[in-house]
Image (cartoon, rainbow, N blue to C red; front, top):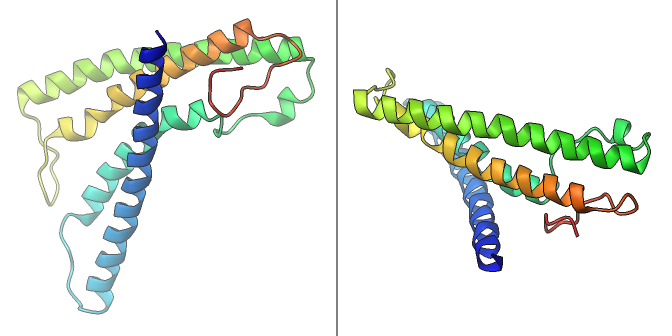
Length: 173
């Protein structure tokens, strides 16, 4: 089991690294587009489409890694005003809800990705790319996010009321 957890954690780390690299690629592409437009007075076809696609990849590759590190947006204003036991159960419940939502998105994302692939649907734009290229990363990212939400829920369930904050390694201890 520890090996599986280690592999999962490494996968999330690589997702975070790829997400960061994707951001750098997007910044480079936009800079090149601006240079071509205003310096060379030429336009580049497809940069906006590719940037949009890479934004989807960046989001879904990095989401579970961010959740693992507890660096996502939370409602500190509300959580800091309730008793530790209630705070723990609110975090536990929100983690279960997050896992359920991500599971639904994973299942329907897989179904839609397979359907788009089988039907050969293309995105009508300057560069026609298969729709599955945009959709495929969504169920993958949501699957890892679902697993991390479940890990987080278990950590909150097993934590004592005195120790409700998750550590930076995402395992709740």
